[in-house]
Length: 288
Image (tube, rainbow, N blue to C red):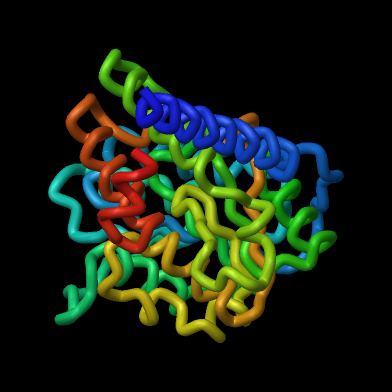
């Protein structure tokens, strides 16, 4: 009886802690749309790696080329797509003079595919600010002007954001909100923003905006070329270097179709979830 009572108390305390973390995170994670827009500022290089994205790429590119922020370049890398991705991009390039389309080089030994694609994109970029985003995202027209405003006012080296995850099937509806809530309730931003826990940092590859010099100073994607999840690893490097990172809410500005179906969502969840714990099974299983 005593054992059962102590277990019940432990569970109640743990659930209470998760609730408090969720509340504090909701307070700390501000919407970037609350910040006044900056329409003219430093050159922003928007960088998109694309592989077999014929269903998504045109919507993504059009949304970024219709931004109200004036000083930007958009570079899309086709990573050896076997579908019509490259042809779609080539046809769009004739319409827009600030769209560049490049073909990915062969994957070197020791690199993961997306990391190599992002490295090539950064190498081509001219901007003072680098925005990495995914080909399955769609951005409202004031997204970049709000984000640049936040970066300037808050003096951040890395601005990353939570976006709206589009769910079309029952499997996605069950899995994706659970994945987001699980992370949100066990990752205390109030501690992560402090300087003591050097490894407690995160980022979302769907929206990562770096100051160029900060990105280069940590070694960029080359420094994480063989890491399973590049975004979280880059966030940790920024923090370990003593630089400032912040997580914002962009769910009213950016939408993403993250996975197709339950299986893809489940496998994606496992990869991202365990990476938060640096692939240490015991703490990850305890929180689960």
